Image 1 (cartoon, rainbow, N blue to C red):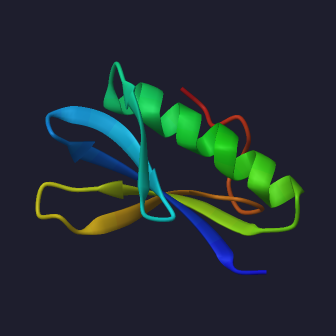
Image 2 (tube, one colour; image 1 turned 30 degrees about the vertical axis):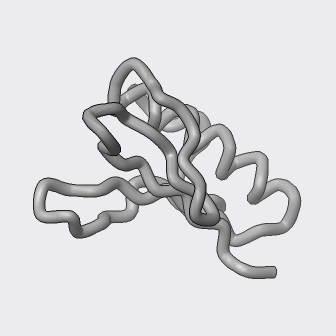
Length: 77
C-alpha cells in the first residue's frame, strides 16, 4: 500500500491537515491539528498503511513529526 502522509499546514491563517490534496479543519492550534493528524495516521497504520505526520516549517519545508510503528501512540505531551 502507498504511504499515507498527513501534512499539518498553516493555510489562510488557520491550522489544517492536508491529505490527498484536500484540507481538513480548521483546528484551534497547531498542537490540536498535530494530535488529530496523529490519531488519523494511527488508524491508517492499523489498517496496513505506512502512515506518517509531517509539519510545515517557517521555510515551507516539511519535517516528520510522527511515524506509525516508529513513534509511541499516543505521543507524549
